[in-house]
Image 1 (spheres, rainbow, N blue to C red):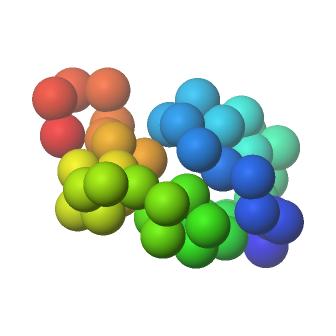
Image 2: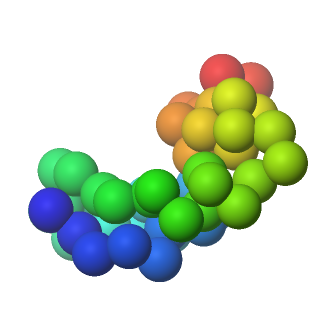
Length: 49
């Protein structure tokens, strides 16, 4: 599990590459104007997902 600070897809990719299988993204989502869009951007697989 990674600490918070994940704000972009690139952050989660870097952590996944390092072997992390879970991240905390609460602050990023709380501060986002559009939570759904922010979450989708973090989970996007680079193929328009």
